[in-house]
Amino acid sequence: MATLCRPAISVPEHVITLEQTLDLARSLHAGHPQLDLALRLISRTGVATRHLVQPIDATLKHPGFTARNAVYESEAKARVPSTVRRALGHAELGPEDIDMIIYVSCTGFMMPSLTAWLINTMGFRPRTRQLPIAQLGCAAGGAAVNRAHDFCTAYPESNVLIVACEFCSLCYQPDDLGVGNLLSNGLFGDAIAAAVVRGEGGSGVRLEHNGSHLVPHTEEWISYAVRDTGFHFMLDKRVPHSMEQLAPAMDAMSASHGWDLSELDFYLVHAGGPRILDDLSTHLRLPATVFRYSRATLTERGNIASAVIFDALDRLFEDGGATPAARGVIAGFGPGITAEVALGTWTGTQLTGHNATLRREPALSSAGLL
Image (cartoon, rainbow, N blue to C red):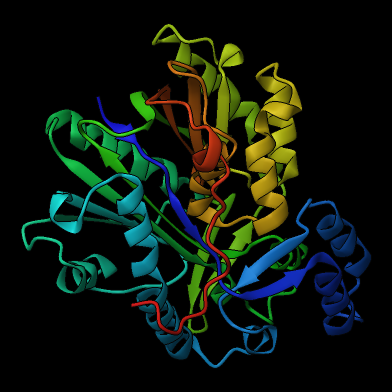
């Protein structure tokens, strides 16, 4: 069966704290009639720090969509390769062993996709398949895992590289003054994640089942308005309640495979915000502690979109992994409202000693990474 190996995570070097975010909101929107509400909501996100691809002064400026997308492309090309190399190293594979690259991102646009550039510059074979996923938002990380699983099921000896590149700060719109947008300005962070799904061998999560669920008629709850100034994030106030519909669907999908979602050993879910995790605990009849890896990602990184589940998985590895045959779930949530869910068991030797205490790479600058 296909195995999701240890991810590699990179975050930019520019950091903004919760206190700085609140101070900026007070100074930039001093006359906003709902400023107090926005400040309370930001304070309740549970986000202590976030990493930004540009210094805060540059982040707050809007030079136009053309300039911003150029930043997206240049920073992706500068930062992604080193993350990919570490992910390949975790999987004990080289570029020549990869049969498909899945690239997920909702914060910039390139055509051809970055997959073509990676193949041309990093030693991947010209016949490597490419699968860019651009419009599933935060759910795309889970979708990438599931599509990699499907591919390795169809081609059992194949290996798939997943890359998630999210520079959410490049979507900041200084003229969007709705409370939902002010909240998102204090919630989202930037990060890159890469992970390999091996068709044979490897240590990590052996993928056994996957499924998707779309909550009908919720297309407008999370969306982008594409305007002259770029992507404008639209967040409906009903989003925090979406677990009421998604949790039962996750339960039913698991039960169809004979799994009880309330009795698993590890849970790696998208941390869109603290309410998502709290409600998921309630609806799945679980203690809040089972989502500690996702909550740690939210606290230290913010909502890093499609990269969240990989950061949470890396924290499980960092914590020593799970016992052999331990069962768990990986779930990404995003626009639609969509859930992408994978069920799997831990395989390989439980990490101990040096391997159990490996730390993630420090924040990376864009210089000297190629």
